[in-house]
Image (cartoon, rainbow, N blue to C red):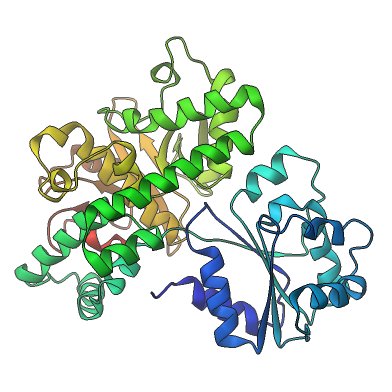
Length: 431
């Protein structure tokens, strides 16, 4: 299956300013598979080391972490010669070996000709929670996410449809109605399946939602295990409570995160570490409210007002135990959850495209779902789960801040009028 990360890895390989690369991201998003495929396609050989499956590896880094010392030993362990520029060295689950991560500093300074990539599911958690000597300024860092809507459609063989969608987005021209309906069905399928590569592959091969759900449940279990394994004893319960509660928060009309919904009388001081853990592990992302629409938006965020979205839609639906048919046909019983699910979907697609997302509220309660910086402009984005696209809040925002244009995301076809670019839900990957 095609992954966009391959383009980045190829640029990294050819860059004259290349440093050792840290590839981070939540568990099961395809980091190891992508790195091994990249190594096989672009190098003469791959030297792969996994600190989870081979705990004895840690001892190799106990005494000396200079490349001159490590390379002969690693060549012996891998059973193949590690050659400058011709071998891709991969350290996997590197969060389990602090000194392996520290060694990247010396690879950068003393042996830049060696191509080395490290991967880890809980690197953010490990680096923040222990005494890691992080190689600041000596590494390139890239975050990998689940498959986006475009990768999902390509995995299902819809290359031509993807091309048409990109053209229509560029020209603000409607997609032929039959193709629009087909793409909306693919969007609803994506909500059920999500972007975890194993789930997408199973769906592409079998179209069996029950099989996919079983895999999603297995991934959710591994997340819960991580919350126990890589967390302090008194934080485990709080982290699980917070994670379980996110689906409840997304069902509310106002999806702003409320501590009291986790537990009666709940406060920030009690749950902020749990939220930090979930964010650092890549399982969720926080979207803060901005108090002013000025650049840089980061300077105007309100740290006490935020929303939380999960990183994968399929896992969200599995966690909520939603039946595939209920989502495919958007049954009435889902009315409270549709809006939050559409918002969550849009946020994941925007984050995968490299945007930092925020939201905005007026004093009188008008709310814009997302504000992004696109082509140097601050652009408001309104999200609707259906084709009812009356957006009073957007009108208030546009009159107040006069943006270059606004984006309305809904089930409606492409178009542009009154300074508003209409984008169908399936086409958010184009933004």
